[in-house]
Structures are given as C-alpha cells and as structure tokens.
Amino acid sequence: MEHVMHGRCTLCDRTADTEKHLTCPSCGEQGILEIEYDYVTMKQTINHAYFQNNVDPTLWRYRPMMSLKDTDFTRGLYLPLTPLIDAPRLARDLGINALRLKDETRQPTGSLKDRASAVACFKALEQGATHVACASTGNAASSLAGNAAKLGLQSVIFVPERAPKGKLAQLMVYGADVVRVQGDYKAAFTLSKAAIDHHGWYNRNAAINPHLVEGKKTVALEIAEQCLFEPPDWVVVSVGDGCTIAGVHKGFYDLKQLGLINRVPKLLGVQAEGCAPFALAHETQQNLVECEENTLADSIAVGIPRNPVKGLRAVKRSNGAFVRVSDEAILEAMKTLGKTEGVFAEPAASAVIAGLSVALKTNLIAPETTVVAIITGNGLKDTDSANRATGEAAHLPADLPTLIAHRKDRDNHA
Image 1 (spheres, rainbow, N blue to C red):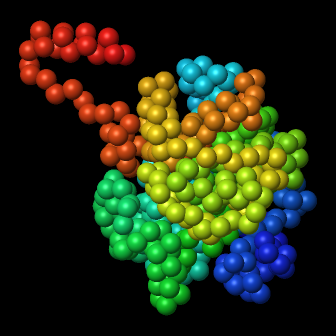
Image 2 (spheres, rainbow, N blue to C red):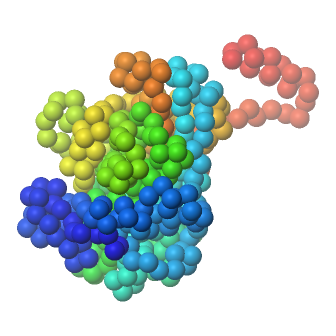
C-alpha cells in the first residue's frame, strides 16, 4: 500500500485515512470512500516491463496497485489468474463478431467474490482482527468463509432466507457461523451492521469497505493484460450492490492513469427486471430508489444498493449503460452459455449474456464491437435454477427400443 494517498468521499469530496476509517468521518455510512493513489510514483515501477517480467500466476501480482501491505500471500487460498475464453459459437448465436468470457467460476470458492474476500481477510489480519463478518446474497458469504478458514479467521455470515442451498452448504462446510435472517437482503445487511458495530468484527461488506473494490478491480487488470493492454470496446457486468462494476471501472481507470491503456472500455451493467434500481435510475436520470427483490438471480437481488454512487459513476464515466432482463431470459442464457461454450454459470452470471443480447437487439452495442462478458459465479451454487432452465433428465427403463423411441421423439422436437 506504499502508493496509497488517502480515501476520498464520494459525497463531500473530503479525504480520510482508510486505515482508520472505512467511510467518511463527516458523512457517515453514506459517505463511501474511493481509494486514491499516487500514480506519478506508481508508474515508476508499474509499467509494461513490470508485467512482462512478473511470473506470479496469482492475483497478488497486482499487490503494488492495491491497498495492502506486503506479506506472505501464499498463506491464503490460491487465487489463480482466470482464463479469458474466446466464445465463437455463442458470438454467432448472439450475432456479434468478437466475444470473450472472463471465467470467474474457476476461483477457489467458485466466484469473483474471492478477489474481494481475500483482501478483506488480509486487511483483517493487518489490523489484528480475529473475526470477519458480512451480509451476502450468497457468493460474498461463501468466498469470505473459505478465505477466512484458510487463514484461521472466524467468519460470521448473514444471509437472507432465499439463499440457495448450494451456497449455504459451502458456508457450513467452511465452518462459518451462518445466520439465516428472516427476511430479504436488506434485513440481513441491517442485522450484520448492528452486529459488526456491537462486536467490533472486521467489516467485509463490500459497499462499506473501500479496500474490497481494490480486490475486485483486479479482474479488470487481468482482462487488460490478457488483451495485451488493448481493452475491448465493452465489458458486460451483472450488478447488485454496484461494487463489482465499480471495481471493474477502477481497474481500467488505474491502468489509464498509469499510461498502460489509452481508454477505459464502456461498461454495460445488467440487472434483473424484478430488482433493477440501478437500471431504473439510469433510465429516468433520477436518484436511485429502493426496489423489490423479486428475481431468481439471487446474487444481484439487492433492493437497496449500498454503493449507488460508485456503481452509477462507473457506467456514466465509461459512457456505458444499464439494461434489464427477465428471469426467463436469464434462464435461457444459462442454458445457452452451457451448451455453446461449456461454461456452467449461476443465474446472476448468466444475466450478462441475456443483457448483451438485449444490447445487440436494441443497437446499443454494434455487431462489429469487441466485448468481454464477466462470468461471475459457478452454476453449481444454484442447481435448482439450472433444473428450471433445462428441465429434468429422461428417466427410462433399461430397454433399447424405448431409448430409440425416446431419441426419435427428442430429435423431432429439437
């Protein structure tokens, strides 16, 4: 963290020491901080040669661009550089020339949230904490539990009642203290805040803790490296609290300030129609207001985003846009993504493909555009939704004529 200058409040523009304050001392919890760096000093060491000569195959190759002290990061979970996959069959189906998938399902607990949770756990250790806590719709919870377990920290997780069984199973296996709150994400977040304040636990809530955006931004740093510092025209991101899309923008912004890229890609934020506060604010050019959490895409079902300023700014400053997609479109995208590219994504991750389809059909994105879609989470976390997308497998007797008849019927209806 040798290049960190301070945190700057997104509301009042005052600065604060992010080692002492997670939010603005003047504005309170609503005053989310943005960590600012001394780019003049940073660019003396962080340049093309730095990346060319860096053999570290993990997220920690970016540590000098983050708000972390140098330490032995091998103590934690192994956080690999995830692949950027060409998706020609899916591109053909969508009607776009060049599409690549950033496959975050390969992270150790199965989602992009490992990037933020690893940072949270190491920051907790820096500050001598023994417990780390958060509220989550599922992925932040499981990633925190897994990363904390590896580092010997205790994790306390607050999830809404609707949290999928797969994510709850992960939490329990990792040994987390899991509190299933009676209510929605808003209720889980409110209780988590009260408990964190009361017990003095380290706060992993990404919308509150500015260091976690610094973890999430590493996905953008990787994309830029994998594109040889020629970023795509658009990057598509599913949006819940707004922290991930804020992190993606921050990563590209940092690289531009360092002179490593010449532009920041446009960002397309995708929300579910049943929970779309960012998209509605973007469409109406009004302040963000609370929405119902009425979607099967649990990872983006956030009715009151806690990071609205950063999320909206990320899209506005990149000259991007938000779109809304139906649950039916998400399930269809989940199936299409699997059968064309062999990527099994949960609903929130599949939403980016549904959103890209909408953007292409409405001419928001042109067919000749280059696009990277970030696949944020693994489908094994929500197999009930996968079954809804595909239907059940055939259940037949061990009889060849019956099988032949079944396959003939299947082919006729294909």
